[in-house]
Amino acid sequence: MSSFTKIKEPLSKFHDKYNQNNPNILKHLVGKLEGGEPFHYLFTGVVGCGKTYLANNIVRSTGVRWDVVKVIKFYEKYLNIMTSGFSDKWSAIGQLNSIMNSKLLVVDDLGDEKPSTVAAHDYFSNLIELRHQYISKYPECRTIITTNLNSNQIVETYSSRVMDRLQEYFVICKFNKTSFRKKNLVILES
Image 1 (cartoon, rainbow, N blue to C red):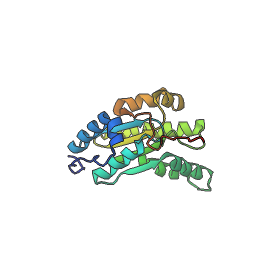
Image 2 (cartoon, helix red, strand yellow):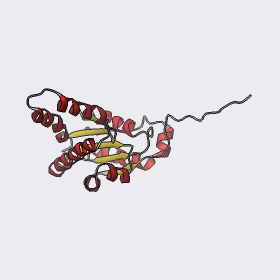
Image 3 (cartoon, rainbow, N blue to C red):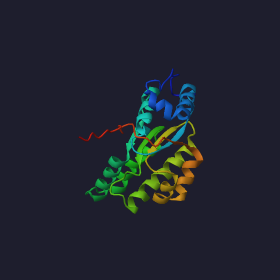
Image 4 (spheres, rainbow, N blue to C red):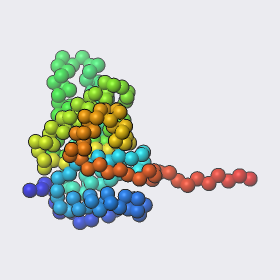
């Protein structure tokens, strides 16, 4: 039984350029959302191509609460715990990491952890592993991950194990290579 209400044209507010550049992604998503089916998506593409915009619209269209992890802020919280005087750091980290067991989860900007270190990548590799375990136990959950990294960069940054886990459950949606923010600039010379 789906926890989502039936949705009529949940993504109809997208501007024309988005529909022209990503019609297959939108068609697939509308079908999933209207049917209330479980899904896991990895949205990958360059900065400004609409990955987070689409994720946010999906979240709004479902009419239920999602947990949203902004990678840069999430990692900042983790580092604050690790450098703080918490008497039980591992308990605090466990509470922070428990978000990976959310029924509805968006992980926004995977690969944007700052500082971008091996330790940061190991941490997020472990979090993806936690999510993978949760998905395997609770197939009715839903997940959206956005990243500017392509599949090869995910392997280089996190590991082939992480990419393998993502490929098992996630539909990988590769977005166009055009930023919506990019304007055609005309330079006038006199």
